[in-house]
Length: 150
Image (cartoon, rainbow, N blue to C red; front, side, top):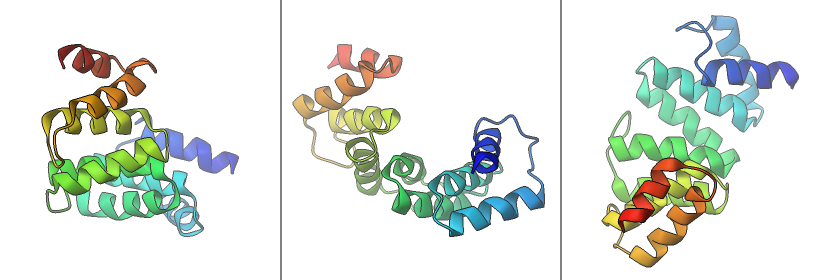
């Protein structure tokens, strides 16, 4: 497990060489198949960094099924239409799940922003404030900035 966490952080933080060794990819693939959301997220991140967005979506999707915090990464792909068909409603649902069930700070920020702008969901300023306040209180500067504007 210690090797997995170290390798996943190495991949996700971008401290690794641009292309991971095939043995690292194989190891993370095996761990993802064994239900490690950390490994699934690390693989998704590696594929996203290499502009293989469809592959990233697959691994982020597997990670999202295992732990809701990973849904935020998949939501970003749906919001941008990278590797998947652009779908704001789906992106919003994924961001909201990552915040509500996974306590993911960026998921809360995106949920608030989508609610404030009506992107993929009916505009709801009061609920947007709740989500933005959640992430602002955890020192997400952009959420604080957005909160001050609505």
